[in-house]
Image (cartoon, rainbow, N blue to C red):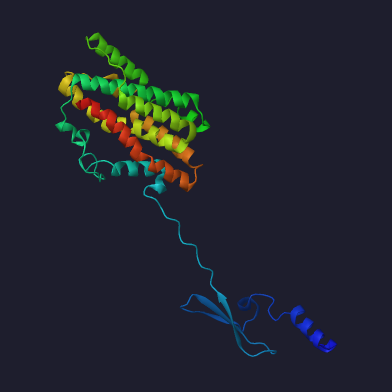
Length: 283
């Protein structure tokens, strides 16, 4: 059995610790050196014990989080970067896609028809009707931020279709590409706000850029250079777009990185559906 003297000595060791403050602060005789291994070795000599090395592993710095292209400028720039990569080189300098479909050829080489263009306008109106109805209903509160942005196209398209009717053209019913896309947007908006807002961004912003180039080409080719209402905005378009960018960036600030990535992953589907509608111009 251990003696009382032995127990007393053991207690003395733990109740009177040899190190009470950081060595390099408490003792002017303390020193340290940084080893290549990434460890800090602290040395202290005391009267009670020989020189010993106390090894403290340096705290491993956390690896810097991966930065996504455009992230420093806001989430809309991330969406723009992903969208640009899905263009062809002729469509955008950042484009990486090979030309596979007729609508992916340079617009200058397009040969549009009146009937095809009317089908495109009708299906486009259905999509814009759907988008505007979704943000008005606002199944998710964030959607309400995108009411009355000035980018709305439904009313403008209605005026254009009325003009075509006055010119003696029969206005067709919406076709499969438009109906399919509109239904997809309705279902998506009820369950997946990140994915829905990806489509919202791409539809409106694409029309304000490449869409205007297409409108100009069609007007020159088959409309005697008439500019349709579809390609006109009330107010400064660049400011309207900037306002929506700011709203999108603000909404995305509340998303996790996984939700942002999910939004970006939806871009291909947006391009697929929009491409099928655009293709109607050449039918």
